[in-house]
Structures are given as C-alpha cells and as structure tokens.
Image (cartoon, rainbow, N blue to C red; front, side):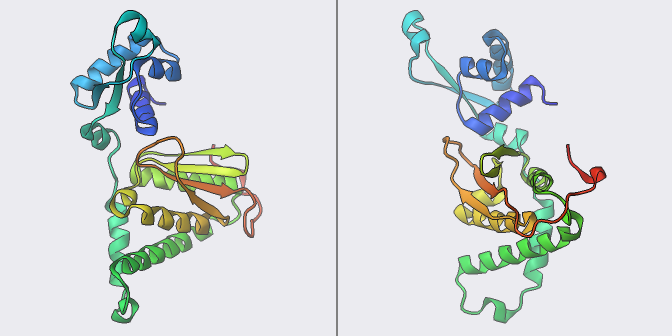
Length: 230
C-alpha cells in the first residue's frame, strides 16, 4: 500500500503538473496536508513549482496558482529503471546474430530485428507458464513484468477489453515510437490476443499505451485457482 508521499509522486508521474487543490481532490485529503508533503518533497529536490494560470481562487484572493511537477531527481529516484535484466537479454540476442542476418539492413532495421527476436524468445520462455491462464490473469502478469523493468506500469479493464500503460519505459526514451511497437509485439505474443499501440490521450509525458482485445486468439482453458493473481 502506498503512503501519501508515494501517491503524490505517482499522480504527478501519471498526470504531469498538478496544483495543491487538484492533488487534494484526487487523494481525498485536506489541502493543508498536501502542502505539508509537497514542502518536504520540494525540499528533497523531488518536485519543482511554477506559476500557472490564475484560477478562481487566485482571482478572489490574489494568490498565485502553483503547479507542481517532478524534477529529474524525482523521476530517477522515485521511478528508477531496472535495466539489468533487459541488458542481459539484449546482449544474448546480439550474440546470436550472424553476418547474414544484418546484411543490407539499416541501423533501425537492425535494432528492430534484435527487439523482435527478443520478444519472440521471451514469449516462448513464458509460454508454458501462461498456458491455460485466462486473459485477465495474463494482463496482470505482463503488467507486473513491465513494472519490474520500469517501475511504473498499470492496467485497467475497459469496454473493449483491457488497457496497459507504462509510464517509465526505458525503450520509449531511447527509441521513441519504436519501443511501443516492440512491447506491442511482445504483449500480443504473451497474451494471445490482438494488442493495439495507441497514444496516451491525456497529455501524459513518457507514456506507452496498449489496448488489448478481450477475445483472445486461441484462448486456453482457465487457470487453476492457485495460479490466479488477485
């Protein structure tokens, strides 16, 4: 369970800049309580403030409307990348390449080849474990994988199936949109369902969004109760 500090950092990571009142409303806490936490977080160098537009409160009281955002330190300390495993897997895939695999390919095509093989091999490694799991449990599992790598991934049920968001994807920063395509390919293989890569529509910064159709391709029988994830 997250404490208030962690909840504030997560909200700012997820949604970008927010005012005291917006944070208080989201967390169902008094503004004075939020201000106390923000003061400590700003003192620790995790947050920065900027003057935003003047809201109705500012118009009546003359007080400026401050927006709080994560600093670089806040991004890296609160949501560190856990890249050791990914580096190990990528090195393994590069080691399996031969000259003919790369002949005539552009730099980005070479990168995509390595990532596609990585997605294929990862999916194969987990295939026996996920065999028979219902789609919802697979979504929980792959989100936990992404959480382990980046430190901030979430899933939710939506009308057409499920949505997974990764707010701290290492590949997103390094490869821009190509990273989302790789994760989309990996998720599709592991979930056995169509996965669509879509932009985050709420102004979130470094956010990779995937929608998963609820009708799985070749869905297997439900998982035993002991394997289910709450």
